[in-house]
Length: 430
Ligand SMILES: [Zn+2]
Image 1 (tube, rainbow, N blue to C red):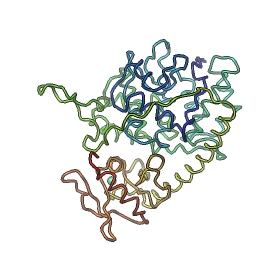
Image 2: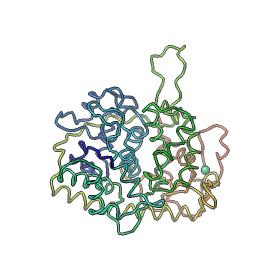
Image 3: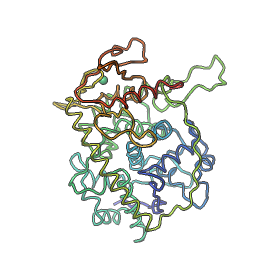
Image 4: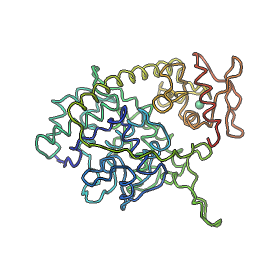
């Protein structure tokens, strides 16, 4: 049986220290890249991020981000951190990045996949018949797995357990009294696939459709997402076209302002007309201590429990709404079939919940959309106009067939949120 080194994962990393969930990780990534989607030299990243103390392990780099030839790469996780406000969806994508364990080659690290013990834990132990089995996260089970798969003394093994389970806590998956954990992957699977493909390409794998699609099976991505392969595979097949059309890993390259006119145009970034202007550089946080004391950890756990209860409710509302519409998109009125008798839709928040927008966590702030229209709605390409008692769609794309069509509506909407979304994207530069 292969045994792995625990590495710096035995350091405490309480990424929820400055807010709910993995808020601190989100802030640190934005700071590390100075809020721009461009690769950064490792040392510069370290200084920008505010964690340039040589005595601290660069946990976000070594476990969450991808290193290549001394550069910290840009990929979907970085895109989400820089272009989107912090959300539960980001936290879950970060957990996925951690579990995927494709982080390039950090200098001085022999293993290109430093977190394979946790990757194996999820694929072999946590995942069972399309779900995550909550008993796998209990002390007894987790300790046994770690003892069998990680080299280290008892104290470091306990830290491995607490840190790994802490990640599941920050993501609202733990604690639970239910036998199975609903990963809620329909909310983040698309980003996770993009991220897995990004890292696959950054690791030098061939950019063929077959090779990219194969990752679902060979890397058992569906297990890392807590879903059935039969659910993920057709979705991956649909999304791969979108991924390649957007330019694959090159979708983040933007033409340099100084390029000569003869330079061939770089592939366009995703949704070039709608991406909000890069946020102002956040002030690097002053990190007083990497280690959380016992008291701090207890508080963190209590906050997480409260947070988890709210998230559960939110998931239930979203599921109820999607069923209520029979997975029919309220914009195009189509439902995406992903198997025999199985359909897929997403619940979109009109005003994003969580900071900074803090939209209400209720059904009247949600609509049911197909994945494509969800992305366009989140980028303000599609908006809803309240016109008397009617809700009319407005598209920024010329000739869009759904422009000026009526919103399919079976539930009451919060007009404050509808107007907020319209106004937010109306502002200059959006
Ligand atoms: Zn649609």
